[in-house]
Length: 484
Image (cartoon, rainbow, N blue to C red; front, side, top):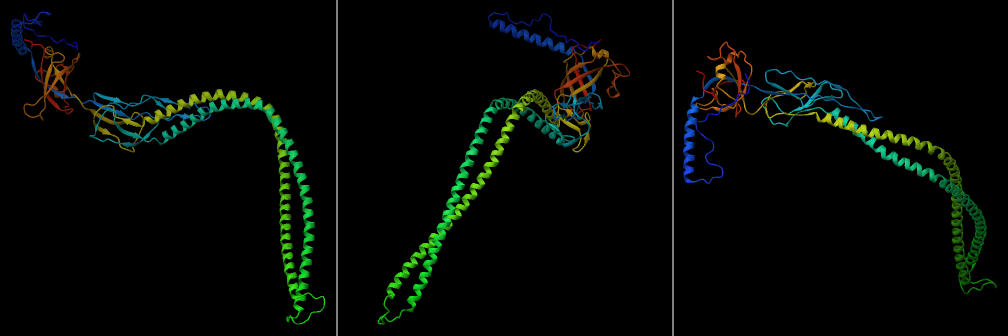
């Protein structure tokens, strides 16, 4: 028996679907004729409709479940030396269907990495939760995966940075080989400059020593002068103290007067102050000269050190000429390897990110959750994470005897009624599948026409959802009249 039976068209005899000739202008007469034809057609169609079979059947609302499987998650192992990701592929296990019409859906297809058991970090749904297609329903702990992504990104960044760095390094080597000769000349000039500076500092030190000797002689003379002035001051003060205080007393001949002695003492005081200030300046000058000599000695030591460094640099330049040739060959080889590392490291990053993205599990369909795992559960790949009953049109399976089957066609209208519905209420539907195989129906679908005989299952789909698993009454209006 074919699963696709043609639906016959019932037309009254002599009826034509064309009411007016194409291109003709409608008139009042043609309009009246068209109306009359429609009335005749409707009357004949009603008679034809009354001739078709009406079947009263018992069916069961089928339950269609979608199982969301635990994704297969792994973490690529990044080779920090070469940038290659060592991965291992294992087969994805699927959760077995627990009942008829159960469809298993897994967000992943293959496993790349280690696999194993993973812990659920969050589960945002529970039994009875409404979900929409694409809605996140659970997440897997991704600490290790996040670390893997960061490691892969770091490796990729390092590998990618090496390519331009090595190119610049090769250019630098070429420039260095060209500038080594100039560097040698610069070092030779620097060595000559150091020698000249050393000669200048040595001359300055000799001159400074001579100046220091002269200042020391001047200081000795000034110190003697100060000592003489101080002795004279002491003598004059003693003479002044021996003079009589009475001005009327005559003084010996040649003795200076009190006024003269006072004036001389004032002059001596000025001379002593000047000599003292001069000694202070000479001492400061000598201190500065000693400091200058120390600076010159330090400069000479630095020049000696610098001269040694320059000589070492000259030797290094000579060695560098030979080393640069070998270095360039090695850099060219390293640059080729770094390009391979950059390409393979980028692949490792994509793999690591893809694995981390699998830790967010989304609902594949819109519906109601009938079963869900809990946060903290340890699940292997392919294990049942959640089971969803999709929302939408319901499918009722009815069983028809062969003589009943001959009266129906695909898309025949149907009326579905359940015992929970109000009196007179029903849900419209249509025939959507006629099986091409006959079998013994379950006991819940046995009727007077179908009893201990083979029957054919027929699916009726309603426009509205119905509770799964419940029995319903189905009224079918077939496309053929009943057999006599």
